[in-house]
Image (cartoon, rainbow, N blue to C red; front, side, top):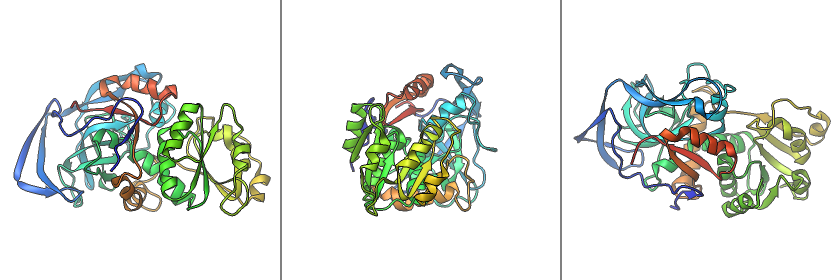
Length: 385
C-alpha cells in the first residue's frame, strides 16, 4: 500500500501514543476481540472522569473565537460507538460554522469537526459489528475537534493496518462527498470526462484519484502551476489555471464520452459564480453537481441552454442528510465501504495531507486552510504521540 501523500508536515506513525490526560486504560487480555480488519487485539476499557478537552466557539467570527476547553464526556447511545479521537480532519464547512454561516443540523453536536479517526472506546446497545479497540475513522455531523466523540456505528469505517491514523482522519468526509456525488448522483463511468473544480483541495485531490480509478478522464482547475503539477501527479489529464484560462473553452475543446464536446460530469465547489459557465461547459446529457458555495449562493440560470443539452443540475451536501434511510449517511458510508474502501486499502486511493497541527493550534490550522495555499487536507492531532 502506498503511503499517504504529503505536501507539508510529514504524516507521523501513529503506532505509539500516550493516553489522554484524565483517562486511564486497562488492558483486558483474557477477552481478545476481533478488529474490523480481521486481526485481534486486547479490548480496552477507558475509565473517564466526566470531561474531555474540545475546541469550543466563544462566538462567531475569526479563528480567535475558538478556545480549547473542557466539555462533558459524551456517552454512546443505542446504535452508537464512542471513539477515542486521534485526529480530526478540517473542512471548509468548519470555517463557515465558525463564522456563523453554517449551523449544525438539529440534534448534532455543536462542536466543530465533520470527520475523525481514532480507536473505539465503548459500544452502545445494539452495536455488533465493531469492537472496543478497533482502529476506525468516522463521518460526523459535528464533534470531531474533541478527545472523544459519539457517532452512529453505521457511519464508521475501518482504518487499514498500513494507514496512519492521522492521515485516516482526512478521509471520511471527502470519501463520502466524492463517492455520493460523482458515483451515486452523477453516475460517473469509465471514459467519461469529469471536470473537478478546486483540484488542489481535499475533495479535489480525492476526486482525481477516484475518477481515475473508475477509468474516467479528469480535467481540473487550480490557481497555480504548482498545484496543477501536483494534480497531474495524481492523474489529472487536463490542467486549467482558472486565473489565466477560460475553463469553458478548454473543456469544450475536449471530447465527451458520446463524441460530443464538453464535460460529462462537473463537480463544483463555487456555486453561483460558476453556475452559468458550468452549464456552458457541459456536454449533452451532462450532469453538474454543486457541492459548495465559495462563489456565492444566488445566480441566474439560462434554462434554454440546459434544456438543449438535456442536462441536469444537482445540489448536495452530506452533513444535512438523515442518519438512516434512502440517501442517508448510513447508505453513503455503506457504499463507500463496499466499493471505494478496497481502493483505499490497496493504496490506489490515498489521503493527501498538506499539514498536521496539534489541537492547541486549531486557530492556526483554520488560518492555513482559509489561506488557500495548501494542497490537500489539513489535520488536527488531538492525541499526543
